[in-house]
Amino acid sequence: METERAGSGTARRVELKVKRQDGQGTAPYWEHFTVAYRPNMNVISALMEIQRNPVNREGNPVRSVAWESNCLEEVCGACSMRINGRARQACSALIDRLEQPIVLEPMSTFPVEKDLVIDRQRMFDGLKQIRAWIAIDGTYALGPGPRISPKDQQDAYVYSTCMTCGVCMDACPNVGEQSPYLGPYAMGQIKYFNMHPTGAMMKEERLDAVIGEGGIGGCGNSQNCVRACPKEIPLTTAIAELNGQANRYALKKWLKG
Image (cartoon, rainbow, N blue to C red; front, side, top):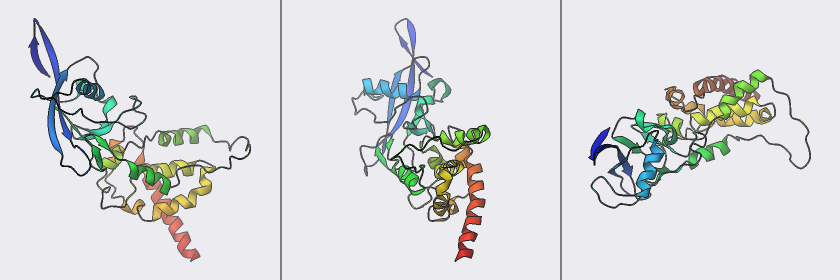
């Protein structure tokens, strides 16, 4: 950590290097900041310090850095960004565990709106494409749903923790502007909703998405997604299982003509 003398004591400082962009379509640039260190700081804390006093390392007043955050508990996925070259959640990135200068960049897979704020709309559109919901008729009481064994509940739970944070999308080399591949998160959510007894009623519609444009054929099996996922969701397991199901489903459709 950088240190500087302040009176009779020593004040610790945190140095950040932020990739900035003033708006969509504008050229990015780098800006350096230093903020006062506090115990148990995370990256969001450091960004809030810049927000309180937006002055760069050279002492020049600048526009405050734009970023997103919400829950601050690694649940919402809003604060995803690249930190020292790796996509992760800023709320769980502790300053004491990061090499300085701490380099902050927006995730490159998504369009940049401003500074560290990106547009994850392609992920939400993907959820629509795979029908990531359980369709029910809510006009009258349906009574209790089908029973699910504790084992199936446990197996499904891990997939339910997906935050749509985009980290797996940033890590995947097969996701990009020129690729229609929906991404690893979508494959995991197809498995999740098809595991539910009621959700399985739309299983074939989801498998149509798996074998269609943007489906599993776009996966290059790099396995970066499972290593990057902050929730440790077994995405490669879901993709492997869906691959077998998709092949059988495609053969069945072909035989039916």
